[in-house]
Amino acid sequence: MAAPQPPVSTARSSETGVSPIEPDVRFREIRYLCARKLHLLPMEILQKQYAELLAGQQFREEDFDPAVLARHIAALSSSVLLAGCAVSIFDLHRCEHAYESEFHRALFSDPQQEYAGVRIHPEDLVQVARNGVAGMRHVFLRRNPNMDVRRFKLIREYRALVHGVYKRVTEEFQILETDRAGNVWLVLSIVNLSANQQPPYKVASQLIDTRTGDSFSPLDDFFDREEILTPREREVLHRIAQGRPSKEIADELHISIHTVNTHRQRILAKLGVDNSLEAVKYAWILGILDA
Amino acid sequence: MAAPQPPVSTARSSETGVSPIEPDVRFREIRYLCARKLHLLPMEILQKQYAELLAGQQFREEDFDPAVLARHIAALSSSVLLAGCAVSIFDLHRCEHAYESEFHRALFSDPQQEYAGVRIHPEDLVQVARNGVAGMRHVFLRRNPNMDVRRFKLIREYRALVHGVYKRVTEEFQILETDRAGNVWLVLSIVNLSANQQPPYKVASQLIDTRTGDSFSPLDDFFDREEILTPREREVLHRIAQGRPSKEIADELHISIHTVNTHRQRILAKLGVDNSLEAVKYAWILGILDA
Image (tube, rainbow over all chains, first blue to last red; front, side, top):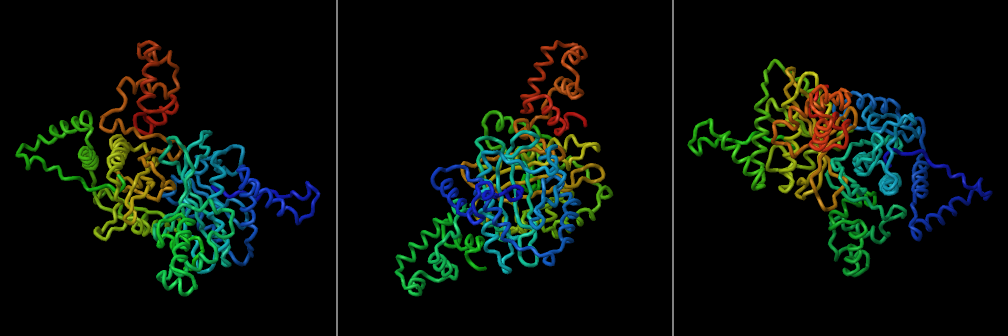
């Protein structure tokens, strides 16, 4: 999401008079109906998933240092380089925007709101939320101390309201800081007007490994799945990553080479990549493989 | 241009044996043939124009402070925010790249070259050079002490070689520092992979006023003209900018209201904008109007 939103109210139980255990059951029904059958806009699902991601973090005061945030804000405010960039920081601990640059205000200012949030075009909103949740989901669910999540950047292009007119914007979205326990704490967004203002518009996104320059199209299709690869596919990919030939993998897993190659093809298709090397790189970004 | 290149050799006179005064004449012929009639790739013209822009600057050692550059490099090197951005600084005084970030190297590294310059797709090169020269030209030719040229940013999208494969990249291109005499000294380029990697590709660009968020498509069509507007059109636009009604402008210039409105329509068409307010804003950026 361009600017993470506070979790939506999920106070369904009081409205319907059912017990507190039921919202999840109802939610699954809705998700099924929306995403699988009716193809309705699944914003409700996405907001729920986003709220779940946030709720899954256990912040403790002793695990983070407010001075770090202050330093980032000081650096951002004084940077000549970023004077012409729309920069904002969202604090997931306090669930509020901790910083918004002058240019951010200039581009997206709204006299009605104290925080001049980016207002995304209604037609683009679901896709933007989808790839935002897809990207964050993998980071949140799979984060571990060995993985520097700040290494990855989600770059997106969508339409947003700029001075009352929808223009195409480009957003770089990344985790700026985790706390000492590894919780995702500060999220950075840099929004610029896009070079391309000509129709037809479409939402586009790339997940980028800033250490290597590798880039991948985020797996929006898998945004509501717990796992992208089956356990077997993960076993196979793990061995591919170790550089083991198909014959060896087949022997170890007591399957045929043909089956190994079928797994390999399915892995490439699911990850949307062309070859095993790309699959290993992307799976590593997604947290499917250990570093 | 993604990374300003050293001026091309224009040592035509020695090759052809003509006097040193003649290259310009020949150059005009070539320009005419290329740009107007044959629609050949005008890279030669663009490089000449670029070289002329650079040569028009009169650097004096006492007008600039090398410590400024050192501070920028130190700030860039230590910035967490820019760790995942491909940043470079070109020094127009020394005509060399003064800085290239780690990510810049990661994305565009070329073992053949000491400086890992951005290699633009051959099909995109002319358009990228065109809007680069168009943008710089107006800044260089019209700069004055009252105009903070760092306020404007050129954002472009084109294809460049990333790890041996052409990918679409987005470039933010801006003037970082002028010297005390107002010469354009340090030029900053920030290149990122584009969110959009799907065909069809096309070169796109926007000139952005980072103080207001206004954006315009650079006037590539006018890149080889001395002036975009005629003196009369400038007179009319100057009065429009002052908020004067057509009747008053007509009286002052001793022309009919119809003629004023015809001028107004031509101005809008030439600047590629929809209304007078936009025309005034863009003309101001281009240096046609005083602030």
